[in-house]
Length: 272
Image (tube, rainbow, N blue to C red; front, side, top):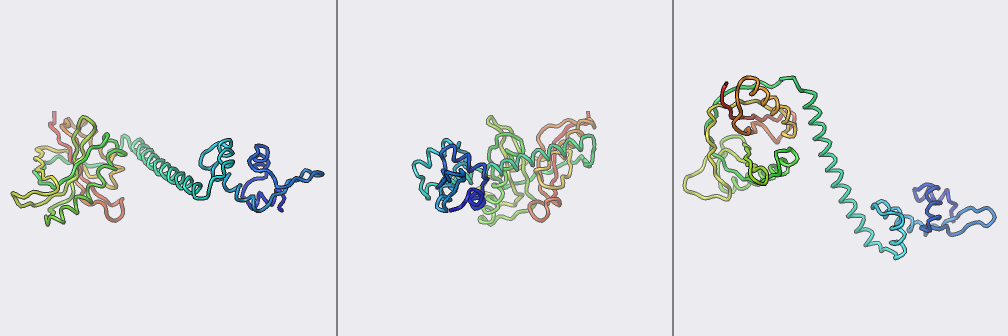
């Protein structure tokens, strides 16, 4: 037998918690010395302690834990419950990490307010033919756009390669509002033989007579500062936006993300 201190050490719990479990009837000592009141435990009781701690870590109350232990939860069932809880916690951590990234991005936006570090160039954009796939996102928010657009490009690239179509330029993304959110278009510039049908859509993007363009360096999760700088420049220089900016991924998806390069092309009229 082990005294309460040794049993707590072996079971990786505190003496205080063992006493608490005893009071609640969840884990009684195997023996209590009548003269001293000292508690003693057997090694076989570690199995019950492990189940008690595991169930508590699942988020169950101690009262619920007691009811489950009374029915003697089997090892397989307990493993299943723990695997489910592990998946839930991993999903929560991932969601929290994404939320933290968004908070950090907003902080960077606030810190750079009033600092115009992006050169803006007014130029015309020629028409371009795209092979594209599209899907609907809930909103223009980064956390809604990213998960929708990211899977489209590898899927589209496989289709293009399978069709034997030549890509002639960098990838382009553009957006349009729809009743249930925003339609996200992911495309590659291509040369296509006329009269053929493909698994992907073929779209001719019209030319933009006048576009305010800016270069964004880094991943698109951090594009907010460049986009907002571009919007302020357009307004401050007497232009008026006539649509959502296209995104031309000049260098993207390979190497150090800080080296990625995207051109934003916002159609404008003016200056007023």
